[in-house]
Length: 494
Image (cartoon, rainbow, N blue to C red; front, side):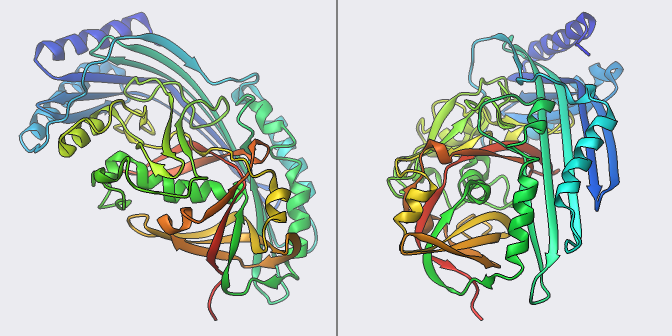
């Protein structure tokens, strides 16, 4: 479905009306469709077959330095939606202490579409279920006590307009999939192995991505084999050692202890009542040694195949690519235009020059806030996984999140993983059960001693990053190589 000429004219007319009223800025997001299909097989049985179709409009008005927002699913009430957003902004402006400013950006007219070959919604349900059943057959066995396979297809068409004259059309496609199996180990404890659909960064985001054996279906036999061995493995003993982090665990490490602490609205205190704050302050940029010289981290939309690539954010800013951490030094934040305005006013100078293109909303009925797009550790020069193992005297290799606990300001963390392998004198030895590791964020990243090359780099997808009040769950990606951190607390004290 496309936006009609009549609706487009009505949106522009309302934007002009509010501009004539003297508001600072207006933007509009019209979702002609926002579709989701979710299928879940539990122990081989179809447990969930859910399809959701949404459409509507969200209007944001900046007036007197304060935001007002309103949304409507009934397009016939569009005039009322604009009026309510303006009234909300005018009311909020009476309470505002720091007047926000969007600055001025040149108008542009562009279209962005996720790369796809086959639309998920054109594939017959039977074909999808047959494919899921074939995967379930590969993870099934008499000793496995629980099996689950989940897939989620997303499709949206969003038209964006603002009072600067910008018009953008975005056609977004995302696909997420997860498989997991559980069994009982030699001590009567449940053990789990799982795998999520990931990418190599290139390629497409259509149904063909879901069917790519390397990215998902062929991993079924691997996790089944690993789980069987895990049931009789020894437990990881408490102690300090090196930790070699695979991308399937590294993405969550990056997400929780780099991505979230560097969201600018969080640094400014906007998430304190729900998701917490950040140990980073405005004085940190350009000064704080976040990690060792081996650690460089980028953000932006330069990964073709990632849910964190969407062309333009919900303020119409084009996704770019920029460094957050440059050889260990913190240099930039995940940001939006209005949050940059507040940060620069509080800093007393132009601390941030341009928006990071990270104003994002989960739906037409939610206002955009600062959200991660793609936050990536850049590949290093320390070879592949085997090279890093060969240079490790005493350590473990960890993979796949099992549980996590994060400090309210992201200053420290504790992660439990599904699986680990011991490394002794440069060789991988035995598999280990119930691995965990913990640390203080800055201390941890300053002990990064090896970062794998581009052959170890993978993009892992996140489909449920929660933030904001009311809560917004959003999709994004993390490109992560294999990397090693030394002298880490691992295991649990008895």
